[in-house]
Image (cartoon, rainbow, N blue to C red):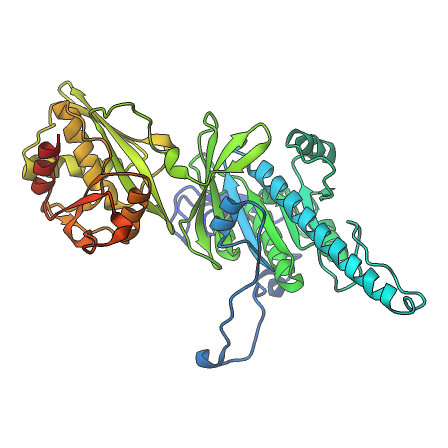
Length: 498
């Protein structure tokens, strides 16, 4: 028997090589080539078929720009991240650590969508019955409108489908009982073979389908194991093509690596319409969903959820999570306003400065450690605050991760407050980017940040001078705003307020 031909596939870019190499010749990533069997049974034209509908060449000005229709999932926080709801024919990829709540949230969303669809079917059935009563009667052989969850007539799409590859149907039903989803009519299919899944999608034509997870699905056309680069790429491509052709919205659940990235080829993220990351500590009750890519909405939007006994519940005011409830102001604490997508959120920055040894430590949680070292150097050079012999610890309360430089001013004020042992005044907040020359640069959408602070009852704000609001603006009543141009001014102003 002839030996099967093997090749080595990169799990970063999907490129292949006939022999093993330490560095991928396509993307230059190290130690990413994995041995697999060469798949000659899949025609090249099917392997690289277009995932979008083709059309003739048309001038951009002649193309009608129309907004896509969205279906709300029943969870406001999830709808916010998706850009308003599920899009017909859209493909969503959601990843996160094991046990963080991906399957729980999607099962809740499917149940809400199924109940809404059944209610719409029932209302349509009542309208049809009323019309029949007004006439002589229905035509002979006519069928009554069906509100069930079984297969529908050709061309009719509706309902939901949950395809589970990691659990049995009984385990999914047990989770539904725990979540209080009694009497749920969500269709469940326990299957991992791609061809059977595609046949079920074609027969039932659901409006929304969840594949949990894409790493467990395999195709008979490929001989490699489920979860391999070739299987994940081909199965995701077929499911995406099916979604675009039928109009069924498909949600793919993806595994993550120990580094926190989505497992499988990187082309998987380029193939889908929306990529969501589920974040949060499994020991905490709060979870964050962050949109990394969204063809139908804004990126970097976040949704905040609280894990309860009845599943995940949306948190309408996430600022309350990220603010510690101190009876009196404490040293080393400063509140800032950060932007996550279109949502301004108030986050408390805490700093602890303590006597260090010959090699002082610099540790930050939720903030960039390298940027912390840079801010300490600017603080010493331009504001005369020396921390070279001190241990400096900085933390963003609530487990939130802040990546924007608008947190610089709040971090530096919190460090100075801890070093001096004097608390900033009650109702105090600050935001702004600090440059290496000591200048305080404006933060984007500063007016929205200040409006959020005024709405939550803050009274004093130190912001870049370019972010100062207009005079006599009633939206900022009760909030005294101080504009600064350099870090020295901010430090002097903080001393005068304390």
